[in-house]
Length: 506
Ligand SMILES: NC(=O)C1=CN([C@@H]2O[C@H](COP(=O)(O)OP(=O)(O)OC[C@H]3O[C@@H](n4cnc5c(N)ncnc54)[C@H](OP(=O)(O)O)[C@@H]3O)[C@@H](O)[C@H]2O)C=CC1
Ligand SMILES: O=C1O[C@H](COP(=O)(O)O)[C@@H](O)[C@H](O)[C@H]1O
Image (tube, rainbow, N blue to C red):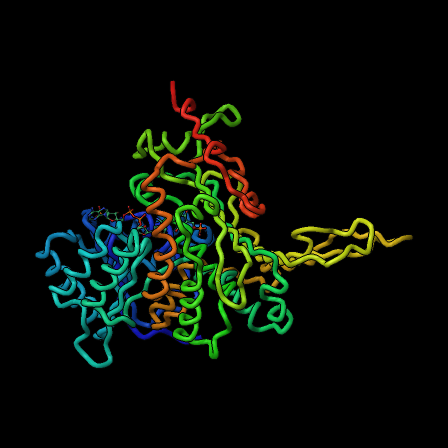
């Protein structure tokens, strides 16, 4: 495997949750697997007062607590931690960029002056404009040599609507080269998500069926059992539509729906993705009412323990109308997909954590056998993204014995049967890609803007009528049934939508 050139990684927001739980454990895995550059250092930067040592101790705990970290001995972790350094840094005070500059300079020197730096914005989004502007002012945004480069990884959410996404892109573009800007969507780093492309484009059998002639509808879902945890302030302003649909579910859809690129290279692939987003049918306010469902979880007692509802979570308004569940039906108006519904759903505090793509094929025109499946979903191909990564195909077979009665069976492939090796975490893949300069699995500006163009009218409609149509679901249940959106002429009357206020009264 190709090794990345020697370089420095600077993580802003280094004292935070993402760094401890995801970034450092992933960097550690890359280290253990010998995939980091030969000469490499990490510089954590945030306001908290740590020394190199106290910061390393904090990261050690994160690595230990991660799924794979427990299996490593202290010696290995110590070796990795020696690469990590820390600088206290206040993003809004331009004077502190001087300290940062000195520290970067010193570290680059110890690495043999590679003049290559990746900046990672793992801070709350309010700082996505401040930090790049500060880097520019301090002259930290450009390389000093021809072989050098500066790259920046921007975490989601990338903007809160089309206008802010455009503004952020403009601002970043004024600081970094476009090909140095990496907008992360960690779903694209998941092995099983990349496998959608391999399954489609490395096999001759699926592609002929992969269109409106044979596919009835496509279901894409990502459900979680977790609530908003300690992310109340962020989630209040985001909601499930911005948090999951605008990015992860739409990106999954793009992989399912895109045309084959001529070559497997970043730009041709990203060109195909943007074509999908541009073809999504934009809804009028009336269509939004019919095609998009939103809901919020309410508290209840489970096994003698009260699980709070969304409005009772820390830092959430007691009368919040933020949605924690969204189901929607959408259409891609192009020749391949014209008329095929894509049915999305996502939500927090549902009964299971599971992400999957299900391709529902059309059924046979007539039924010849007794017990033969009829209607929707007789033949379906399920691509399980997580957990228990797998692919399964459901079809009808003759039951043994006399007669010709049919039973639905499934042919299953489990991803872990491919090798005894582990499945890398999404962040491992994406961190390695940015170090290598491969942007294939990062979102491009135009596709992000096209996805906001679809999302914006929905946000506007909800903002105008925050209560209208907001359903509720008790915690750890299935939530509203997305299948109702497939019913013909599903003009959901508003009176069916209930918001049970009494549940919040003492
Ligand atoms: N956590 C997760 O699982 C995921 C997070 N993300 C995204 O990644 C980014 C980071 O997430 P996460 O680590 O959870 O965020 P945190 O809220 O934990 O913030 C990260 C760090 O940023 C610093 N910070 C917070 N507020 C300010 C402020 N007003 N001014 C200056 N510094 C501040 C804090 O460090 P200090 O006080 O030391 O300066 C904090 O430790 C977010 O944009 C989030 O949306 C995306 C996917 C998943
Ligand atoms: O980006 C986000 O994703 C997580 C879900 O990610 P997964 O890899 O665990 O499926 C979600 O919990 C979070 O709210 C959202 O910001």
